[in-house]
Length: 243
Image 1: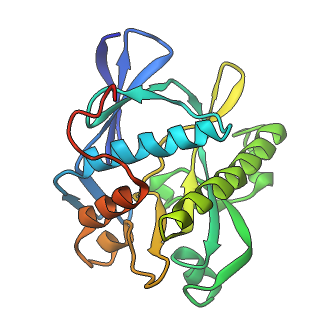
Image 2: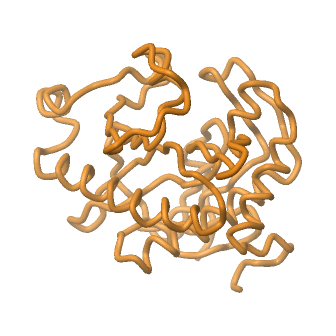
């Protein structure tokens, strides 16, 4: 399989076509952004850490029976994935109130949510990813009712699997966002699962181990991502492709 032209370049990843029309290559870059691209920096090693962490998480989810687009590592910063027809909504599951939920609802940061909450957001940077509901999704044809049901079910299954896995490593899975796409008539998990797209806190101190360190200017962003990987037992030594 050969890597061909660039298909799309996002905030932190570049997507390439390949000689296989059903496969793409994701390249995780060192770029880091927040506030819809208003704050941007390059952080050394971040692309490698996120690529290897995502590979571990996707494999863990596959082993738990959750279908994903991940196929394998190509290099320290690149992965091969299925080419999906993406659904333009983000699925957000929250176990603990934080971030935009607190701003929107005026609730205290850090409140445990029992049961966890679920929210849909339209994936549109220009509109600042507005919150939408199932009626919007149906009316605008972004997904069918059956696909909405599958996205919700799989999101909560991901939560059950990863909340337990992180807890085993003394990490609280506060919240996370997922994206789904169609492949061969099946809805599967796409995009990535890294500390860029979720909130992770130390179970004892509630120290932030995620992208909030960048948003809030706390420093030690990549070091926190590496600490998460170390707790999960992920080998960050170079040359992991094919391992």
